[in-house]
Length: 448
Image (cartoon, rainbow, N blue to C red; front, top):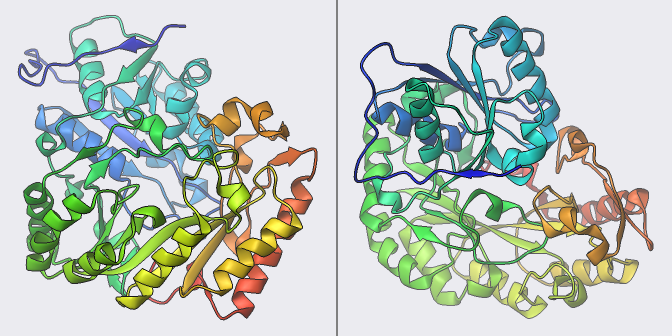
């Protein structure tokens, strides 16, 4: 099946035809296995809804996270013309059930699937209940889909959503579409809002599915003025001065961080962000601290050179860079969180000990440990044999990184180890780091 490519023209906006406008409902499905399913509003759907509303369409956003299970279907009204769902692998089966329920109550409605799972498996998802599947970013695609239907034009089954560029032309997410008081994300014990100041990631990590939503490795940045204008608006409207930058790598480009620093410093905010060890110089650490950053997270993944290498994760970072970055963060007083992955093909008791030895020798405070999951759209999922994976659990409902009571999905087997061995490694690493005096991220005081 061919994926239809829409080429919108930002210079000539779509004309909304005279007459009754179609009504759109965007739905964020719950993930029932998470300890806290209502950390923050669904930023992707907020961007989509806000953009479509700028074009004059009536759009409602319904966030079902943490909603009572027994009443979920009734929480979605059945009088909309179009329903859009952001899909994730771990709760995709549940999203399908919600879509089926809506279609049963409103047979004439149009169902749209977007988000990471649909972007990774657009043909597979198109064979389910959905009338159209969007692969990639949704803002432009959603408006075009509405316009197709408004004009009575036939709708392609699958659509390639174009990456939005330049990002400064996007309207700021309209947080009035949700109830901010119901979300629990915190920075330094205070309620915060997540901001996306860039889109994309240039790195080829074989386990990561972040690139499936955008234009491959193309990075797009918002200007410092545009970022600070959104911060000022949030401070004025909601009285919030704590933020979480949701960029894949906030510290990707030191020249941009140098430009952002005086702007963020002037706003007198506190924030946290995601960083990468190979770009985290001492100057980068100082710039973050100066600009209001108080918490930084690193995808360390492993302390084994073999696992990190281009023949392994293709992480393109070394144990020496990990140690240097964590020390730089500590020197300037940043609270530091690390993420580790166990169970990558080639993992052994020895590589696990290499990871623990390195982590014990470095200064940092918080951690999470995930079992390796071969998410759809990643090389691990699409070409498992290239990595020595002999079996992958294709029940995506098991693709849980961390749930209630440390629960996780163990879904990969190789010739050298099975799922139970990965479970034992994870439990061992968690216990060892706790005994070393580090804090499990879920128990961190003031930082959710």
